[in-house]
Amino acid sequence: MRSRRILAVLLSSFFFLTACSVEEVNELLDVADDVLKAIENEQAQEKSNSEDKDQPVSGSTNLLKTKGITDPIPAMLVRPVDGDTAVFAFDADGDGNDEEFSARFLLIDTPETRHPQLGKQPLGEEAKKRTEELLESGDVTIEFDVGQRLDKYDRILVYVYVNGKSVQETLLEEGMARVAYIYPPNTRYLNDFEIKQETAKKKEIGIWAIENYVTDRGFQSK
Image 1 (tube, helix red, strand yellow):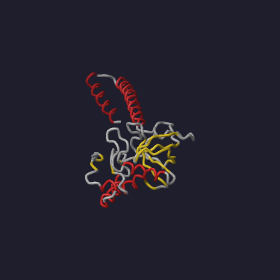
Image 2 (cartoon, rainbow, N blue to C red; image 1 turned 90 degrees about the horizontal axis):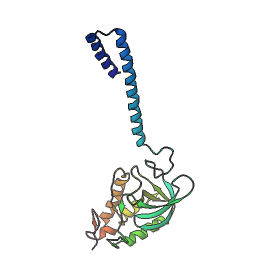
Image 3 (cartoon, rainbow, N blue to C red; image 1 turned 180 degrees about the horizontal axis):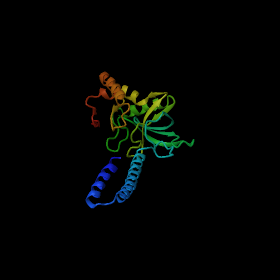
Image 4 (cartoon, rainbow, N blue to C red; image 1 turned 180 degrees about the vertical axis):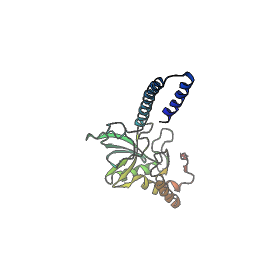
């Protein structure tokens, strides 16, 4: 133990300076050893407490309180809201009971259908109908990413699949959505999504067929 050796050297120097007996020096070393052990135990406890803060809630089965990528979670569509938002029901607590959650689709943005300021935007209804068609066409599963699981409106942030196929990728590839709201570390499929978006842009379909409609901040309403 480096700190003990340093202390021993200092105390030995003190012995020569003050003419303490060997027994007295040994007693001082024993006391110092106890102090150092207490300090090390305290530091170890502080480190353990710090690490615990980064771990999932102990004993919690609530998917909203844990961290890390999840396996696909079976969900039931309650109702679509617009192209990138829907209400799903699923078992979040592992107790066998489904709860309803408003869900925001990660990493995409579709035109608005009833925004209080923007109103109804071009292709907003089309995007909503396409999302509804997809969600009603098969078995729905959702997946969380490694970062935050709720947005500021308390909507869950998820990737959405129907029969194992990504709804986000389909909307992007068909020109019904743009890649948006990129907040690391929730970026697991960002590269895949950007590839699908580029396909739609090159074909000039959907939102990309309207000149200057898509911007970095959303959709340009006239």
